[in-house]
Image (cartoon, rainbow, N blue to C red; front, side, top):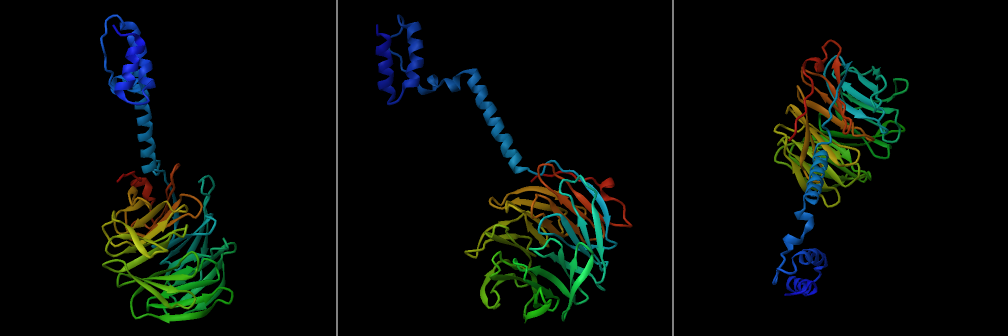
Length: 403
């Protein structure tokens, strides 16, 4: 008959090094059966008490369930969707943009006006709006001064660019350009404004004098335009499916990126300065490393030409929209679609708030003309309608969908 110490010693030798935990279990077992056993070989599975006892097994299951729950929450940060509704423009809306501190939202419309909406991100206070009148044609795009939360620039089909004071609602500067303006963007330092027109001409305005300092006519279709975060590179999306990268302020060509198989319509710069994204008529959104100028992934959820894209303030999410009846929200690093916001019409413009996970969107089709705001955690959605239309949410409440 072997003693307790002999059997424990055998267990250690036969199972290799560092079997102290198993030896302790074996000791209790041997002490009970010492007069009956010859030699027992204890397998590691039998002696792993965390896997064999009911309490430990339940604890592992709880840990696994909690891990799955956290993964699900990470995948669906927009699951608590709510809605609020407001009346707005008299005709369809083309563009929407937040000011640099995320407290005011501007919208431009075919009704020849822009509106400034004073938005409380918590949703507790009443929304106020100011109507900006002066343009004699559609307000196709607008953008805020990145350094001043009360200065707004608008581009119109009436060939003018106007600068507005959001506090008074009055036009403070006006520039007459050569064509129907459809695109506008600020340089990150707020010193210059770039304007593109239907004739594929680019004009750079000095903000202080509000006079053109550069003009360049291109022999190809130019769509949306953007500076990088440093202001040293300038991007053009083209109807050839390319992205033209220019040096700034010289506007000399640096690179031509063969980005898509169809025209590139829109561009967005990651707020961290790491990526830029391009939406195309081929229904894809491509993500590019801004330093290496290489495409790192594509987002493929949409099936129609991509009209508008926007990064959230952390650079974690990208929203994209088209004639598909939903707005797709994807994770930038994984490329995975994590949520879809249902729509009743094609979207013209989406824009994330620069401080919160709050999304503004605008539709340009016959029904509905609306703005949608959605943010994670306590997610909310708002709609802005032409005054003669009923509130969409009463008949078509938003529904959650998952990818």
